[in-house]
Image 1 (cartoon, rainbow, N blue to C red):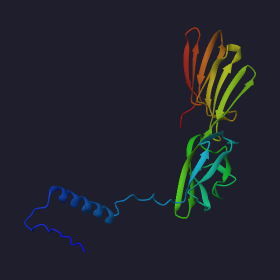
Image 2: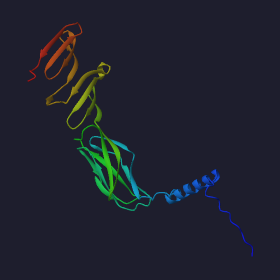
Image 3: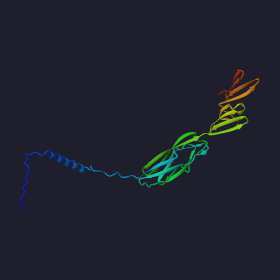
Length: 237
């Protein structure tokens, strides 16, 4: 039987630099393993959804209905809940059809249009489309514009361009006998109401052709020969 001799270094001997480096490396590896310094897996996915609308803007003349817009629920990471959709900020005088609130399943869509009444305010507005399911909530925006009605019509030699809403009507009149010259610019002018902003007329007065500019308050006349006059129709009070 062979005998082996193991030499134990003297306690007075200092470890070599290589041994110290190996020891430090082993300690560092043990530290990383103990602290979980290895590669970690991807974070767990969370089921969710998003809300979309196409197109994201629509318009209609007052007294009419907008084209349809498509509101959709887009599921993410296996989302399977029902989403309650509400339309917030619909302006006064505008009605959402078929309704301003409804429920959609994941991947489903709803066609919505807006009835813009004559009483709706002219101009743009923003509608928030809110989708809620449990603690999840997301929204998207829709721009809605209500436009004033515009029409043209002719009465005798007068050609009128008229734009208005339920409360105000602006009108410009052109006289086709005078090469389409503008002879009227009025606001809320009706046969029973002299609420005229300004009206221009060309008439023959005595031997002179005169241009009249008048409102419900006063009348100004200027003749082609240079004559002029001003007359107050009634007091502003």
